[in-house]
Length: 111
Image 1 (cartoon, rainbow, N blue to C red):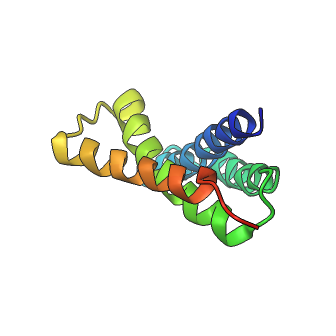
Image 2 (cartoon, rainbow, N blue to C red):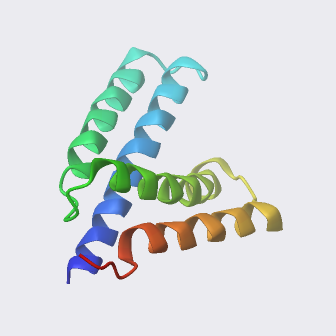
């Protein structure tokens, strides 16, 4: 159950961080206004909070692993929201990152 909880938290963190960055992008680059940017700032703060709920207590490990989730999640977000179509190298890179997440977070450790 701990691995499942961890994965759900990574997904929630990705939605908050990527969504927050996207909202700021929309507010500033797409001229949608400060309300959009402000909502993005709130979402980014929520991301920081969600990351603290991971079962592992190591900040460095959590953020390093989350980096891989961020890479894959950003490609998925772009596909869902902006019509981005990744090529095979994008997909291969995301798979490599997710394998890294698995190794960093869920590999058996002694001690």
